[in-house]
Length: 352
Image (cartoon, helix red, strand yellow):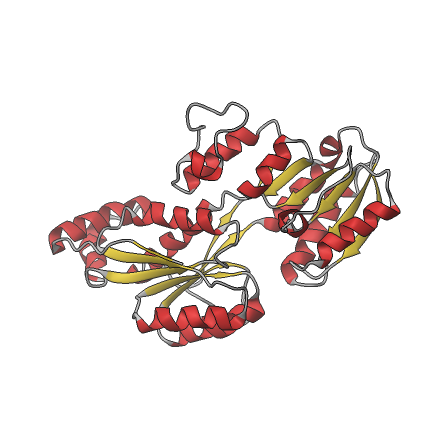
């Protein structure tokens, strides 16, 4: 699926003024450097493409929306937003082939699996296109900019609040992907760093699964069969709760997971989920476009890293998080959260 913003070419003088307003807001540059900076702009109508995760990825709509929110402030460039239809190397290669043929000046690439994404990223890099990556690192490849979500810190936040999340429970089971990737290992280590400090909760058993694979759901079922009285299932991947049909829990059992996408919100309202930890996904796309703009003007040297934080979401603060999530994606609240449930804030919370 492709969503394209129409090309809008403005006169050079107006373009320069528009550019200076945007870039000054981002970088707080000195006025004396403005003319040199404006001279570095690509031609009017130059193309910037954001390549997202798989089309049906629950984060994609918000990532794309956040990118569009930033792009609205840059009228002298043309933007497009595309995603592969499948999570395969070839599907991503097909998208990249089409993108390269259109001669963009910058590409923002979402990297969920560094092995799958490497051939595509290397082709973009070798073509001379300014490259910004979102998601995980591709070892040995240094794009102009990288956008990271602080999932490891999010896992630590989950562990730190585990006693409160358990709400009087005394035990839990854990599904993770330790040793399956660098990020998965860091998430596991940071979670255990704080969770093991609890003098109340006991970890009955943990299972290691392939990151993002169906094995996570099977591991949850096996652990519940083995420990039918445990009250809490913790998964450091949201995979089992996003399957079709999703994994369900027996009565009086709840789960907590890394990931806070809209598909999980009804389960938090129903108290089947005890807590979610995840980012405002719109901030990923917004930040990627910010870095793409900097790559075109040389405002900062290559190797920029920007971080997107994670938030702890419970039933008590869900409605505020929902509002922030939609705002970050530049989208009407009802797109992500149809009005079928509890009351919501009537204004945007401070900080948005």
